[in-house]
Image: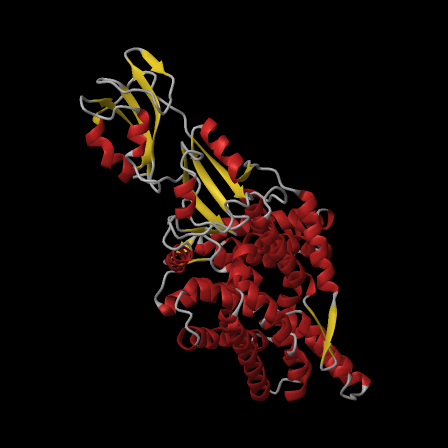
Length: 566
């Protein structure tokens, strides 16, 4: 056993990064196992694995942790920026009240436990810092202790106790929040986090179906069909197209007579037995089918390649115009191009006559390459899909966010700061929102963003476990399990009380939204990462972003309050 310890200790000492990646590999492997409906998940698994490997002695530079967390939180903010700013307003009062609930219940729990078990001010502050994963409490509590006029020995003892309490409780503070938000809370409320997230996304998109990569509708809204012209049918291509409405046009894309493909024109005459390819919305095509003739298939030369193109609206002639107004005046100009979707800052808009376009809206066109390029030029500029990240834009965003995190404001004499996490989150939100309005630069592909979130958070958690695990286990052995169990209470009770207040009093009936808000109000980044994984979409992000920013202030204030009340 000693030989194994010495061997691993030697490897970890020479290559701390080995311990980080080993923790990730083992953690995600363990996180895949299911025990009934319970699954640990990759983030919690990485934390558990890191705590185990920390017993062999690992020293990882603190900068690594900071960099990984900054990448994670920036990507989260960037993806959620448009939805976040759209959600600000009076409706945010729920997030404010939930954040206050978590902070107040946390304060009450710590004070009560301190009174019951005769815990001193320093140890109580450390329990709050670790149990509620708010490291800033350590600093402000230590400062508050120094102002009590204690003798040097007592002051040093209490300040040391802050660190001890933090070390013992921080690991479960992270782990417990994950388990509660992802597993316990949905079980108690009898809801599925994934199903609620899907329902919330559908409501946000006003019932529009959002397809993931590789998915398509079994019955598509746009169709192309070939018909054999019957006697007494439409006399010209123009007459056929005019028979459809402006808001649901049908266009002729190809005509074949005998063995020849004819040059398409509005005045092209149609004769019996011509083969015509028409494209349009399903109902419109079906409505004209009987008048056109019999549908035929596998006609040589009638295959036509269609494509999609995203275009950003910049043409002032279209801005502030409804679909009905545009349809009635520009049918010829938009011939052959169909609108599949319209999105404003990431949110899908209904394709209805009264929907008004705004500058910066994203319009998804469908049609032949020639048609959609012509129409796109009249709308604005095309957004060409790219898998490359704009590192200049991302780098500037991260730098600004870190600078914001350095800003300190005094409230009642106490220095309050958002910290690097809060600053980068705000910057990511702003840069993501601006990119959604100006998509010609600042690209962060979804795959790259997901990589930053997954690796950034899991790596951050692994480094935390490697740094704190050895001290935590050592302290538990020396102090006994009592401090650890008190920390469990400090972690779980505020979450449980806030869940009840959020669900029954504040109206958080969607468990995915509540989980996001609760993880933010607890400043529980690992829990939020697992909530996102369980949700399968970004629905929990907006409430998390609001409560997370508030938690950095509310939870930090617990330090001096605990020192005053214990």
